[in-house]
Image (tube, rainbow over all chains, first blue to last red; front, side, top):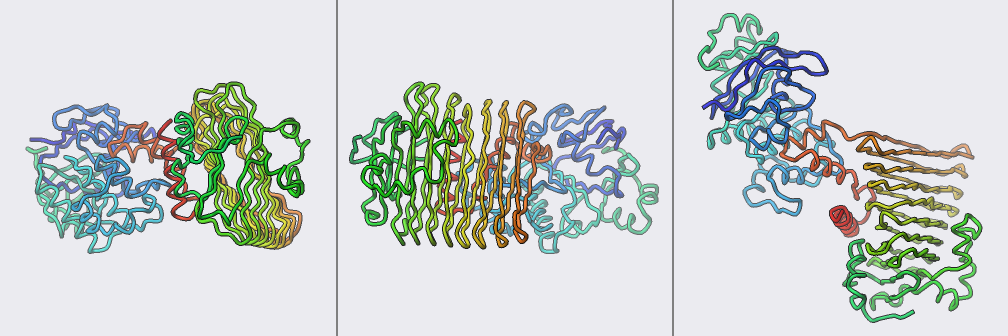
Length: 249
Length: 374
């Protein structure tokens, strides 16, 4: 079954068209890797899927598990099971990381984390940050880990993650990748992951690669090979020489 | 004036209202309690453990008992300052007199409740607090208009003396109602090495509050801190500020305020620091959040330096809630209203007040309770 169907979507940000007529599909239980040069609109597409107001879908449709969500608000989309990790998450004064994690779990502020949740918090090396204001003076790696753990606690169907491998050390990257992998393995969920560096591919299985360039989405199998080709020949040559998967998209 | 054995014996509907504004009804974690209802002090009791550390009684009783109090009465606030002080000087119904004895450390907060339950009442209060040399104490005052009382006003004079080396932490929670007119007139004087910390919290809607307490830092290394958390909503009119006069060598002032305006609220947030000594330091900080287009925040900071060497700084930011923060919380399954509430509650961050942990948790709990009951 298809989890997400993006059909002929045109997206405007700050009154400028960033993406035109984009179509692609995400199947259940798969990791998708999204490549693309700077400014190609990768962040725009995941923000548009999550429904962030600044990224307006002006035409086309987005269907999630068969529901048309094109006009739905962010919270409705997140309740349906879409969860996005922010590339630059905001700092919110007076709102603690523990408050955010409880919100993600759907619990009230007086909730005590159970054993398993505490274990995850510890594994993400976030125990010492629980009482700190969310993202305020967090390091790059701390922000990333805090984002991903929130997404996991949200227990979504589709994870949208913007550059989980930027600004994190190897250990954190391994942890993040293996958590995403086990999340996809134990459920019928999927992820769409933006990366520049491809490092995350060392630690997770991904069947599909999407390359967003000049406002068009091109999808292929074998992200590792695509990534190597991009490194060697550049984005344009890469998409010209690869065999696209016509059927799935 | 009648005094009863336990706070718990007061009428239930009175206690419920007091509790909502932070009064601890069990009194276990309080060094003393004084309760002024309408025009009389109905309860005053010192916890046994603190009997030899402090004095607590109705101020009218104190003025009779201690003629020397004339040296403290109407000395920091002048009788003819304005129509409100004049009215209190003509007739008043008491108030509280608190005296922390020399070198006494009062580890539990001293609590007071000033409540109005009578319709159309003009409550006129005169409070005196003396923190004697080397003493340390924390006072929590809750000011309440009973929900059944209508159209009342509160005129309160407070004169506070912080003597050599004393530290006084004063937390005031305003829990008035949509038709209360409130005119506190307060001043504090601080001697050598003395510290006065004022924490002001106003979260419930109120018709009109105007106050501008002054701290006179005459002492060497005297210090004053004014922290305010002001949440103006439902057409509240709040004109709130503070003034510090840095006269002593090494005197210091800090003013931190967080102001939120929504639903047609008008907030004027003032702050003035006057550097009158060539060795003094002051910092003023105001953050404001404006939630809708019907509301107003007007921040008026004043920095006055009369001597070279006075070091006075200021930071302010007033604006709307960031859309990105709202989107972020909505992407975590919160509705837009829930997201705004969470940001607003976060903005009313008690930890800016730098209270000791136990007090911080307590004030935080009170803010939660008051915020939730609205």
